Length: 115
Image 1 (cartoon, rainbow, N blue to C red):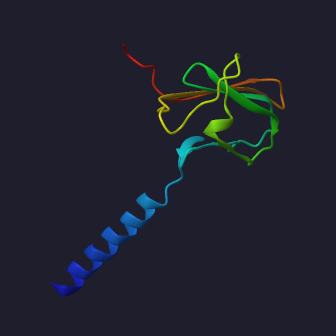
Image 2 (cartoon, rainbow, N blue to C red):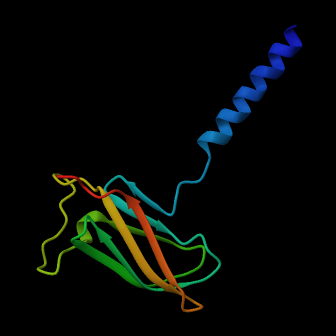
């Protein structure tokens, strides 16, 4: 009996560890920072990141396996208004780019806001 309970407990712990170490998606918001991971085997060019439909940022190249960490305060509108993480909430992120083969990269995080 004790052996069976011991095995069950060890299995539960192993499942818990695996669940906690599972990798996040390619887009994440971590402590007022947007994190974008290129988990593909191809570089991305002309990376454009749009937060909440209005605030834009990006970079020329995100290498295969690379990561972009960008403070949310660096994203801005076409009129120069900066995102203010102290009183705004990120509800949507869209990423567009072109990979090394010329194919489109389109990623989404979050959802459209309902009014």
